[in-house]
Image (cartoon, rainbow, N blue to C red):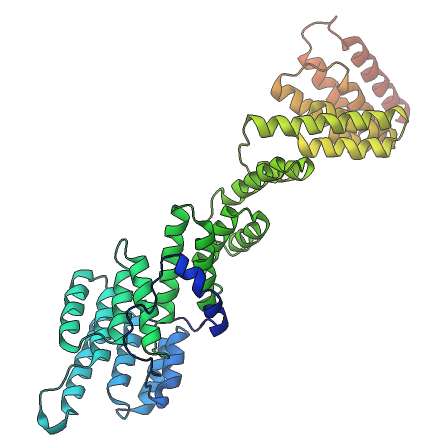
Length: 439
């Protein structure tokens, strides 16, 4: 939690977004009272800081061991961060105590040492990381009394605020101020990205998707791959009506295993509604279908729209059938099924087209689906689909399935004079005769 991401925003981006951020309520640098100076860092410890930035505490500790005690207080503070990263809270606080002791020993003339802001700030941040918020608040208050306002303490204040309910915006201001007071100040980037994320979330809650997007993009400049930052961008873009980009971001997150529930389906549905308002009905229907295929209940209006479009495809298919264009008819009936998967009519007409094209096995599978749907939904069939199915199975050399189809119908027939019973018995007899003749 104390480590900064290795990603930093290009200066051009920060400058380009400065005015927008001001509109979001940021007061970055408003209280800066002196010219910013480059933050002094021990060059021998650059690789250690890089290792911590990259989230590799073991490498940081190895590098520190190689340096020995030469690097003084800053090395001890880096070691405190590294061991905390490894989960050693006691060891981390011990390194803070060591840093205070070394700082006192190196003070001139044995005078009482002026407290070191670096040590105090790191100690505050460690307490925050340990979720000891009250202790961190007390320590920060005493630190300000002891050394006044410094870049390090501004950073620590920002880290504390973003872990305090409602403190995101003020924390963002503190972190931005720390960076402006001391360019190059380490361990600002990651908490600053988190602060942008928090403020972006607040903006979304206030229906300010444009501001949320600005903060999402700034957060992603520090860590482009962080899933929370990408999800914030996706939500902000959806709020601005950019559903295409939003869905691309969400799909990547789902592929990576981030649990998003019905979010993808809801985005497809919302995009469909926007397209419908723009009179782009065919595109809207495609988005509604995508939402439905992901398991979302569409509601009465969207469902009726899909049924209407399916009806249009069926009518087009029947026009092709009248011209004996079986391939063209099959294409349109498949399109109708995509829109209305439970349409018995579309399935049945597709079976006819396939049968007419000599695709008997495929026709058998389609007519089987017709019987399943009709039985499930209690739909009476106006024609003997089971006879067509038996013919398809016979011509596909699936004689046993043809027998079973006819026998199943007769087993379920309520009476000998029920519709199609006689025809079914006659077909069954012909099959048996053919079988005997083949034998």
